[in-house]
Length: 336
Image (cartoon, rainbow, N blue to C red; front, side, top):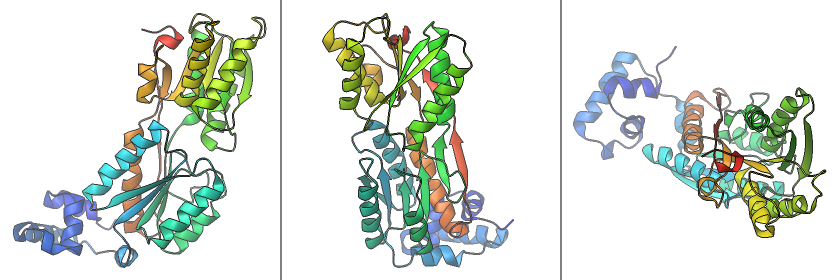
């Protein structure tokens, strides 16, 4: 296998960013370091990838990042990880939020293309990735973030959201809850449908358990509050004894509604689980149990993949990295 830029960095005892500077901006590097890097290049027989060099030529030293919702702290943590890693190689990250709108997503991608970004990181709204393919065909590498690539046509960094749904359902069943409400939507968002699939699988295998779906128009506090108000008005024989919200913002909205009405207690009457484990979940008036995603690591790893995609040649790397979710148990399901 041909030596990579990371092999050179390891051999020379420097960072990948330093090797990149030696190759592209030697005026920024000390003479002794340049000599060490070139020595490593000769020993390893490293051949510079012309496609990757041409990819960067004439482009900005910025990556574009498109997330579903800039108001969601989870995506801010993802952006933090991406920015921290990008700076190591001399790049910055420009972020925009699609607000779960395919039209807005398309506009952001067009803007990034006009700004000649060096690459795009994106959490897509829908499964139609034709615009992303056009970007890649035009020389811009693309990595999917917080979502896998089912046909492996793009590199991706994601979390096993089906398993996350299973984890939430198992926990609720273990604490004796059998009437579970899933709160989330729109279902066109793959992460939502995967989390629901995990819950559905576990509930279907549990005799006497029932699952009811409460769809939402967005993954927001306001939509969670709307569903919480609906639940508070239900008679006891129709009311769920647990809620699994597709993200923590929805869970916070449900909790707010239940606390404000004062008619139902969490977790005594209704247990509550969210998803993402944002900081607000642990600091809520009733700390919320949540399925944790490693947001910072997702962002940093996505930039790693973007750099490797450029180095390997567009469309050749296609690495699929999947993190495993974990459960953070708190008072909303009877934890400490």
